[in-house]
Length: 340
Image (cartoon, rainbow, N blue to C red; front, side, top):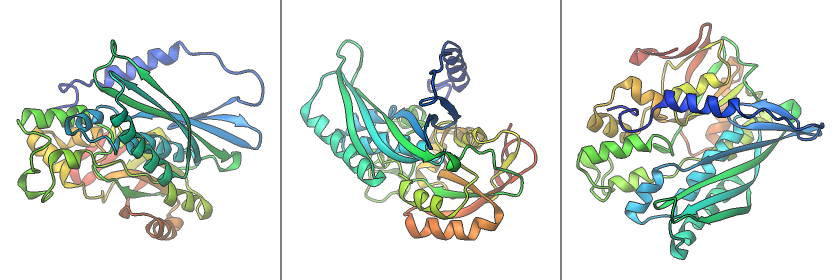
């Protein structure tokens, strides 16, 4: 099984994005608000600072929330997918606005979604300052949840990956599971296996838990530990491992090779999906995070202190997973995976 035959064609999506961007040319005139580039998030000029904006949603993970009638965690996912992106340019998240589109607005459901947004905001130390709830009965089936994050960074502390060089170290922070990407494929695996989200998780991988419970595990938020890291370490690059898996890392700098020599151990949910979906390693590592939700790239001399800081401020597992070398692409030698 592949992402493409489950309904998502990555190459087609990339071409669609390319064509969208080809139509967007206007740049603001004036100093304040001048675009300053970016990758996971966009930056604009704001005096001694850059303001940072990024936007994302929960995706088809909401289908599992609907199936279980459990809506109190998807708000965490919505905020996590945004604040984690903002961190990748060296920024601290400040505020958030959400967009909730519903087939039929239901106060009981919106209250539960709000609980998740509140939890995510608290974990990220941000304020939710507004949003929009749209009644789209003629357009949408169920609901969709997305949002936009505002963050800030001093100009001399912006991290865009240009400092990355061969010899740097790659430190991985563990994910909490699938996070909020690849659910079209993950749901297809469950359906093809004729399983239900209310079934006990098979093979004793998560005793006492249902498939749906595990698949709804909220995306981990890395704000607290990364903000602490920024205070003491000159970070060369950060990659939020979302859709496209390991392909997220070369977004930082293309003309080097990222070698994942000792990857974090994927959680059992990934072995379940791979086994029941008969999915190859190559596909798994370019669709899912496979146990690593965030990659931090630092100079070799800073490895020990970076790991110490992250371990002291994070619930995630933290370890040295690889290094930067001459070349291009991403490799996982242990699994004989090469992405170029």
